[in-house]
Image 1 (tube, rainbow, N blue to C red):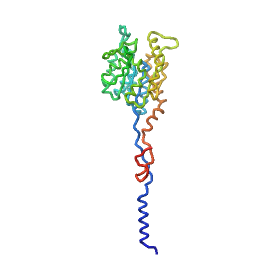
Image 2 (image 1 turned 90 degrees about the vertical axis):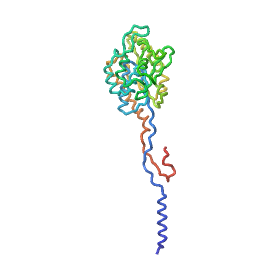
Image 3 (image 1 turned 120 degrees about the vertical axis):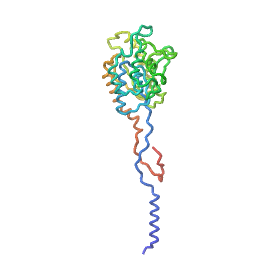
Image 4 (image 1 turned 90 degrees about the horizontal axis):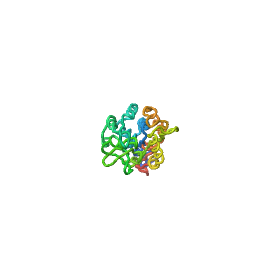
Length: 310
């Protein structure tokens, strides 16, 4: 007959071993990595800039958050509207109503055939605020000092005057005076304002470049075509810096549209949508690492701490 005391001792030892044995690994979720801050740079292009709205529509539909916006020329108009709280759908509706006459008027001046002072009225109707500080999304607007040639980037203060300056296309519109500076279109300094976004803190930069020549094969129609074509050629040759500051460049197919084709808003916006949808796999990858991922986690009895992450 076995010793009862010995059986009890064995049972206690077995129980003790079970208490000290590591628990099986349990499925858990690693805390997501911080989401990269996304900035979108909207280049110039007159009516062709309506393609920017298509890009914004797709980003909204895909729930891609935008942390910073920067705009040049027409990009500053759309960027300011969006940053002030006007959604892409509303911008779409506005685009179908706007015409060149809504923000320009003839003038007799040595410095330009048009004044864009009417743009102040136009912007007053569509913007949800009057200053950079009131914007829902931080915004940078690019202009160029016509005297020094320096880039001038606005991120604070009054909103309307910098947008007017950014849209003051040389030869067509009169320069805009802000403080001691005489300013013209930002395309001369930041054709696509990707670098200002980096300075604002953007970790990913999505740039929208509206590459198109102003002159068709049959030749220029008037002096504006000549001026526009000169700037288009120069712009194509100055892409290096802003492309280097961009993670991804969208180039909507807008070559068949005229610079004043506001009546073709539907097609221009669609061109932006098509370009952005084609790029969505890449854009989604930027945010993939920020989603919670299942991992094998060990308890404190294991050799690797529970808080360690691969």
